[in-house]
Image 1 (cartoon, rainbow, N blue to C red):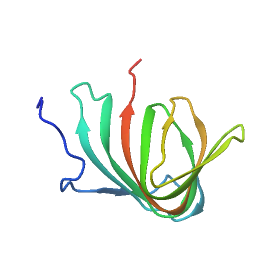
Image 2: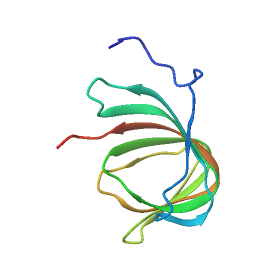
Image 3: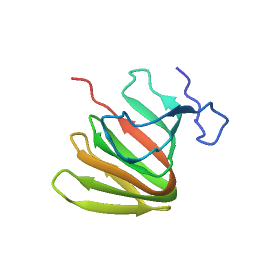
Length: 118
């Protein structure tokens, strides 16, 4: 494993996907993932994620730090707690969170994910 600093702006091929049909609520969002770093345990990841407008259900098994660099999103928990985030905002989604993720303006975020193994 390399011990070099990893830049999050290098040319990395994007993985293009969409939310699974059974989780989709509105729109036809396209998701773009560029994972720049994975540790040797495959428990920690960091990169950039982008999405076009839409809304879908989410269920987090990982802890995720998000730093919005463009666009706007609204995240709502299953209990109805809503939070809006835009470029410059940073937040953590904890493992166990369930609810919805809505992209109201095409967005990009930097992420750092830790997924504990049981």
